[in-house]
Image 1 (cartoon, rainbow, N blue to C red):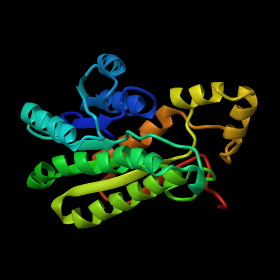
Image 2 (cartoon, one colour):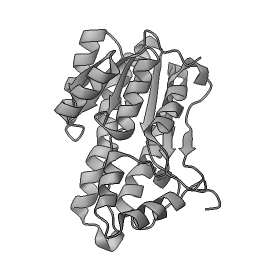
Image 3 (cartoon, rainbow, N blue to C red):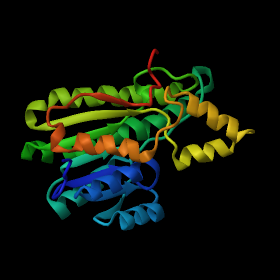
Image 4 (cartoon, rainbow, N blue to C red):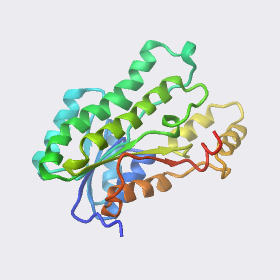
Length: 251
């Protein structure tokens, strides 16, 4: 089950954290994986460690760069079977604490980057009547999270985008789903924790947000992407798959 042998995949934001785990998981399942990121050093490291992979530099905030990357993949491999729009950035603040520039910065990567890269690959998927798209949203794309106005706004957009692509192109052989993780223990989160006056207390509070009493791991999120990318999920499209340890239970 979940065999991706012969598939071609591209994962954005794959130089660390959840994206790194997704890239390595898909490669271990047999796919050839493009590790897409702006971080060349770590992107190359992940590609090397994944084995059946190659690094490709992509600045998602630049439409022309998304189109260039898609053209390079299609010229080299002739197709893309699995697109994982995982890259994303965050911001802390309420509406009054969020500048227009903050929202624009998040929108450029979290929404427009996903839009541009998907649009660049979609025609070739439609031509083959096959394509799997998995977009990383957040539990903050399903419920509101305090002090995360800009982040939640963009992640709700990711869920809406996913559902529209799924509906518009279901008969074209395209499946599109979003994953909605709760808090995950990534290098980014660990770095943020180190900035708190009491990192241990902050860690405990973040862990307690989930009903299961802990944060998730990148590998747990990657496992859900493997399922959605596989042919075993052929009847699954348009979903916002919550992988949150019970974060949203009762909310």
